[in-house]
Image (cartoon, rainbow, N blue to C red):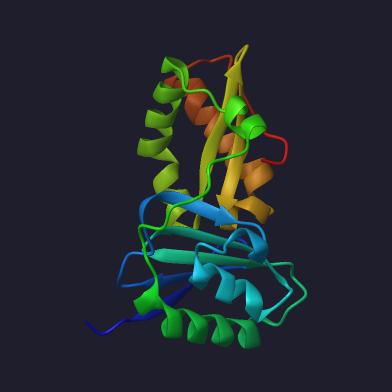
Length: 189
């Protein structure tokens, strides 16, 4: 099969979405914040090795979202990322395993019937748009009507994510789940 790659812009000016016609992550998604975290994923490591300006590499379904710090020239960086993906994609394992979160992080995220219901609402309303834009959202906690969320991929550093998108999520959840819900960004996850 011939591998094809398409580059899409995102609402975040510091993130681009690299879409391929093969899976890059078959189950779930994963965000890398630095090259030293991805020894088990040579493709992610190769992308980080391109430039110190790269701050995040996000894998989901059939795309990789790459975020930079805003100091690099996208035209130059884009071509290097594209070449790196194309030269490494055939050896990439889309079933790559991710390390288990540290004890503190896993203790923070506890599944509950409430969070399952909220996730279901987000799956039907918000997540498809976020994923189309090269990102996603993860719930970290829900207590006393306060939902804490963590943005992934292009959404993580997007200027509109912290205000506009979060307000839209809150309004949807007020309408479909609980009129008293408040949505806040979680501490660095």
